[in-house]
Length: 68
Image (cartoon, one colour):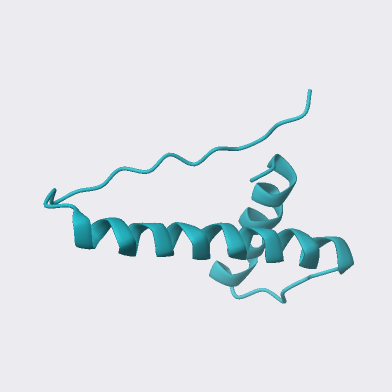
């Protein structure tokens, strides 16, 4: 996930939480689609590992790509 995608999702979630009008432009849509795929893949991975693992808790780390 890139910093730009993280920023777009954070901004969107904040608008939803505050009950504000959701502002999505063309660039945001692209970012949100990639973030949605990221989280869908994460959920799929968790579901696969839940079946195989006897551990009561699983930990995941979110990787964020930041260009300097």
